[in-house]
Image (cartoon, rainbow, N blue to C red; front, side):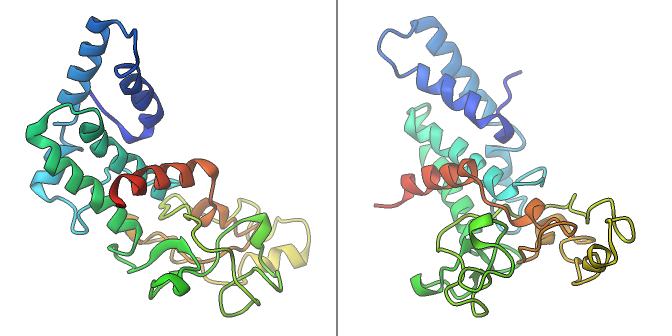
Amino acid sequence: MAYAYPFELQQQAALLHYTSVAGATAAVADAIRSAYRAAMDGDDNLAAFHAGVDPYLAYLKDYTWGSDAIKSHQGNMFYDLVTYELDASVSADAARAAARYVHYLHGVNPLGLVYLSNMGAYGAERSASEFYHTWFHDGSERWDRVGVSTYGPAPGFLTGGPSPSYDKDGCCPDGCGSPENNAICDAEPVSPPKDQPAQKSYKDFNTSWPLNSWAVTENSNGYQASYIRLLSKLVR
């Protein structure tokens, strides 16, 4: 049985790209296209879209570290049905499904939060005010939290997203090497992101060790690339 999975987006995208290159073996290309098309009918893909199983219309079975990137991956999976013209009868639904993952990242989520940094000047009523990054670190006079530092972080960085597995470092509460480090363990509440439903397992913070905010808010080039790739399909 064919299976398409957002945690393997890169492999699936590479295979689909192969089907479009000059000199691709026709039988192999046809097999890839047929397998991907069938897989996208699966319970976590078009079936979930048609059933409306997610109240925010952007279904994801599993929420992990970097879930905002996985949302982008899932949206890209849907739009690849359009890009590679795999089935004209589902192209409209696939494009609509892909757009919903952008809407989720742009605020159609339980927190009403745009998961992009510092977007107030670009129309967002509530966007990420800070995120874990050495450029925009906790305590920076210029680049820390919006409204606290001079500028806040640079705009438009996709944050990691809800992470139900988040926890403080294992050294907490009293094994972090010094009384000062131990005190950081309880310097601010961490519920959320702890002890919340999956889609609400998020906090807008950038505190470093031992609170380890990177498990929730850290950006990466891979996250950003997947988001931009998806957004590019929907901007005219």
